[in-house]
Length: 190
Image (cartoon, rainbow, N blue to C red):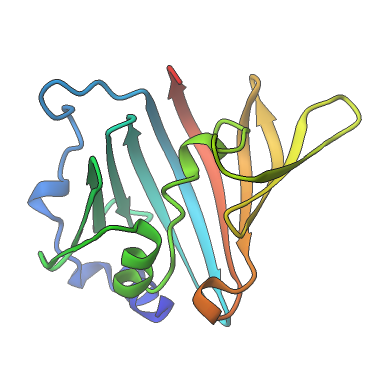
């Protein structure tokens, strides 16, 4: 599972940079991105783990996320156009699914909660789905529980989350997964 991503990160010489991943660049025709984020993730899934960088652009109808090694070598590119989710690996293999969590778990070895992530990185629960919020003494959101994920806000910068810890205690009956996200840059029109 995570051994595959850890191997990709540690064997940088073997990783081929995807031509499609070389530049996130432009939004698909007619689509303006409402959220742009650059950050670093650390993953722990059972006894395995790994680190990567992400560059992500999101709109209501599209996502474009590039996952790279710490040195910028392409690991995977995840795109969503409407309900269609695609994942291209560093070796050029392409996969499709209707659910990003299931797709990333089967291909990369860990689930990415793409459905909730746009709201969670802004410090709010996703709309239309049950959620529990916890606030600190100043009224700032300190945690959200939604979609089976527990999101803890560890640090804030300029009214936006800067460090987030996301944990799912039993994704698809497997062990707990923990994703730590450090947001280096974020722009939002959401």
